[in-house]
Length: 304
Image (cartoon, rainbow, N blue to C red):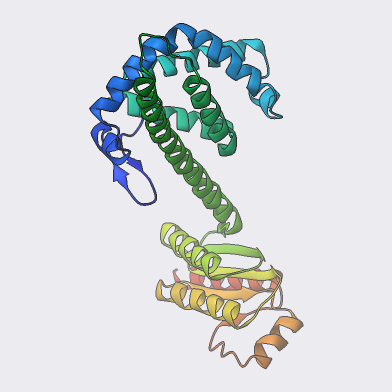
């Protein structure tokens, strides 16, 4: 179900009435749209065809309209939309439909610049319709102003929903990348391993902390190996992040070992004057695993 909450960077409005108020779409505007519609509707098909002639000049046309069936389908939807606009009725179903269009555009990746240009071109087409003798020039001008208001409102609704969908997709992608970059794995009963690769910043350090503690709580692990052989740079901040992780795991009854401490990293930590305290380290993962298995065997023997 499409949400009825529409948010912009400065304002939130949840109803059609709020949307109309925000963009100053009055009852007089809607009446003017209806009168303009009486003039425009008979020429609707011609305007739609002219619009698509313009659309074919864009490089993106073939990407989003690969065949005639797609073109005919979208033409029908657009024709229905403009008829709805000139009916002069803006209710919640109208608002929901605009949001749905924003969601579709986000899913297919339609560039917002193309959408802005298309709306502008369509409004110009309708605004250029000649009025006959039954409609005064100022009356038609009122319809044009109303059309511009509604088009602006509709564009805001579509873009806001587009932005929300894009942000949600980015957050989902970021979460997936985070999970891939912090793969805490149970390699043996009571033993967890987290091999780190790449750079570590404050955000990733917090992700490492969260993932590690969650896995320890889930598995009741007693030994946690944090392998940093794939970490490119270990500076003061990175070293402090790692120390905090080991302290946090110890509070949960899980002893940590930092493996993959190369001579260069050891020298860097010494030169930086970082106090590693009683943090246990090994030169490589093999040594860390050997130590962990010995401790597990010892703990098992004591349990009998």
